[in-house]
Image 1 (cartoon, rainbow, N blue to C red):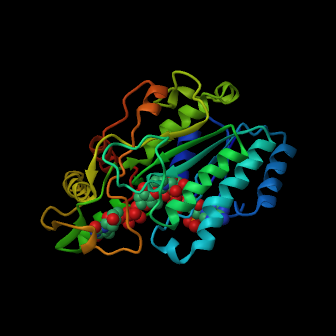
Image 2 (image 1 turned 30 degrees about the horizontal axis):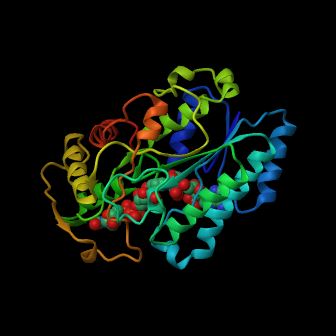
Image 3 (image 1 turned 180 degrees about the vertical axis):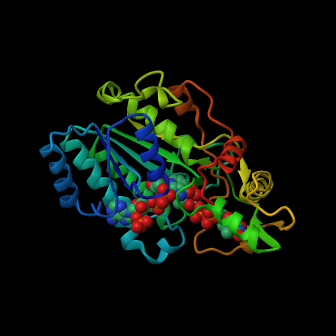
Length: 315
Ligand SMILES: NC(=O)C1=CN([C@@H]2O[C@H](COP(=O)(O)OP(=O)(O)OC[C@H]3O[C@@H](n4cnc5c(N)ncnc54)[C@H](OP(=O)(O)O)[C@@H]3O)[C@@H](O)[C@H]2O)C=CC1
Ligand SMILES: Cc1cn([C@H]2C[C@H](O)[C@@H](COP(=O)(O)OP(=O)(O)O[C@H]3O[C@@H](C)C(=O)[C@@H](O)[C@H]3O)O2)c(=O)[nH]c1=O
């Protein structure tokens, strides 16, 4: 079985559904098993073993994700994003489990001019990125059998995210300003979950025990080496481009009133002040994961359209 930590968050909820569709036996925990307390993790792992369960993998979707707030909340952010993965990795190592941890494009400063590769130097611009970067190192150090999937600009049905914020503001306002000088790639949580499941199913014991592995749309061509991978949808756009497409596709999907207009105006980061400078360019190079998955990754626009027109979105 696998243990999904952070199962009530945006990604965790989506992943919980996907694991169950694939028939991968899973237990999920969130705040009730505090990742900043190694003893709490150990106690929970012990209780699973006591119930006769073999922990094949621990997936960490728990994190501190409020980018601006983190600047004034450094201690909690670092306990969650650094100590958390460090503790989980140690626990996974103790029980012979693989760890799969999620990280972010915000580990880079965004001053680059080509998509970031896994081994490019990191240089976060704020506390969130810094603690996520240090959490990566801690996880890899404490359990060499760790996969880290860095992703970016995540949205999905089960939490606050840019897509939901935009749809709400577009319904309320007649004009919106959105930054046009930060580029990256949106990622539908559902696409990321396919990749996560494919990695998990490359573990022989998990594949053997899964009731419906065919429900995973992706399949690894080989067993992925442990280490860091980049996964986002395909494309290279600004938040302004993203907002425009949310508006058009949101209208097509009947999520916005067609008789109410909202003008979306491009602006600079300086015109949209924030505590933390976001990376101006944070496109991720996905060659490494593409080779492992042996397939193309969906384009951001196709995934956004599918998401907005899907029945499961609760906007
Ligand atoms: N959202 C995004 O745009 C992106 C996210 N990522 C990464 O993806 C991962 C998932 O992100 P996302 O789903 O958005 O995160 P969420 O903030 O939606 O979920 C995080 C979950 O962790 C829980 N949690 C908080 N504190 C603890 C604790 N001490 N012990 C156990 N669980 C706790 C939260 O509970 P509560 O809600 O009660 O605080 C929440 O349920 C994270 O690692 C994030 O860094 C990467 C790139 C982009
Ligand atoms: C609401 C709003 C935001 N913006 C800008 C602010 C910001 O630069 C950008 C995106 O806004 P967000 O609040 O979603 O940004 P942010 O919280 O920086 O999103 C990040 O979250 C963390 C967890 C990650 O790991 C990143 O990959 C990324 O998804 O859009 C506007 O320009 N106009 C608006 O009306």
